[in-house]
Image 1 (cartoon, helix red, strand yellow):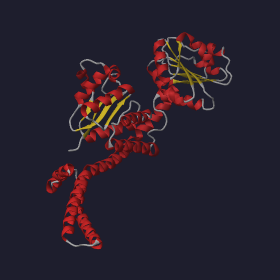
Image 2 (cartoon, one colour):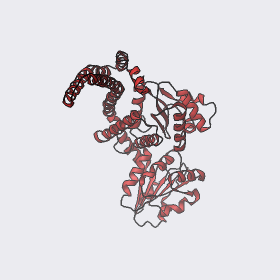
Image 3 (cartoon, rainbow, N blue to C red):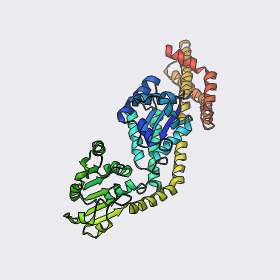
Image 4 (tube, rainbow, N blue to C red):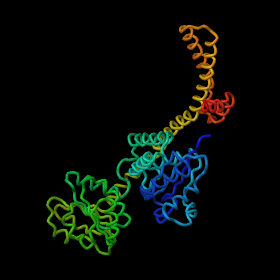
Length: 427
C-alpha cells in the first residue's frame, strides 16, 4: 500500500489572529517539530509552513495523524487543552486534495492578498528546512520541484504576479521606484499598527535602505527592529529623525496631523523628501506638497494602484488554475510510475534469477564453449524481455485507470514476488 499525502491547515480563513499567533511556529520550533514527527512516527515526506497568516503541516502516512500532530504543536508551544484547537484546522485526508491545496497556497491563490509574492519564498524556505532535517524523500522532492516549475510558468505566462496588490507592498514598491537613484536611502516609518507593521515587514525588500521605526509603544518598535535589523527610536524623537530621512511613512491614528507644512518647511531639504501617508484620517497635511522638493502620496493614491493590480490578478486566476491542473496531472503521471516501478523491478529480478539458475543448470550438464554460452545468454535475455513486456504494459495501463494497486497485488500473487524477495534477502 502507498502512504497517502495529507495536510492540516490553520489560516486566516478559519482562525482569528489570536489563535494564529498561539500556534505560529518560528524556525527553531519548525525544526523541533519535524524532529519529533520523524522520531515518533517515522515520517519522511513532511513539510511545515508557518507564516503570519497560516500554519500548515503536510505529511505522508497511511494513518490520519491529525490529532497527534496538533498535540505535538501544543507541546512545542506550551499550550494546554490543545485538542480544542482542532476545530480551527482544515484537514485534508485525501491525497489529491492535500496536493492541490499545497499548489494553491504556493501560487498565492489562498493568500490574504491574492498572488502574494512572498508566499513562494516562504514555501521554498519550508522545503529547504525539510531537506536540512532529512525529512524530504523522492515524493516530496518531485512535488516541490513541480510546484517551483508551476510558479515559474505562472510568472512567465500570466499577469497574476504583476505589480503590488496590497497597500503596504504597493507603498514599498513606490518607495523603491522613487529612491532607485539614491544610495542607501534613509527611511523613517512612524506608527506600527496593522498596516504599519505590514509595511515594516515589506521594507526588508528595499535592500540597502537605512530604516528607522518609531511607535508610541517603544517595546513593539524594538521587537520589530530586532527581527528585521532596523533601528528603533523613541516616538518623541521621530520629529528629529524626520529631518534626516529621505522617506517618511506615517501610519498613525491621531486627531490632528502628525506632519504639518510648517514642520517640513523648517527642514533643510537638499534634494527631495518623499512623504507617504497611510493613515485614515490623514496624518500629513496636503499643503506640504507646496514646498520645493516634497512629494506626497496618500493611502488613496496607493490603494488605487493596488486595486488595479488586484483586478488584473483576479482576472488571471482561471489561467493560473489551468496551469496548476496541467502540472498536477504531470506530477500524478510520475507518481503512478513510481508506484509500479518497485513491482516491475521485483518482477525483472525474479525472472532474471530464474534465467540465471536455469542457465547455470544447463551449463553444468552441457559441454558448452564461450560462444555457445553467449548465444544462449542472448536468447534467454531476449525471451525474458518479451515475457516482461505484457505485465509491464498492463501495469502502466492500470496506472492510467487508477487501478495500479489491484494490478500490483495480482502480479505479486501470480509470480509470488513477496516470497521471492524474502528468499533473496535471506541469501
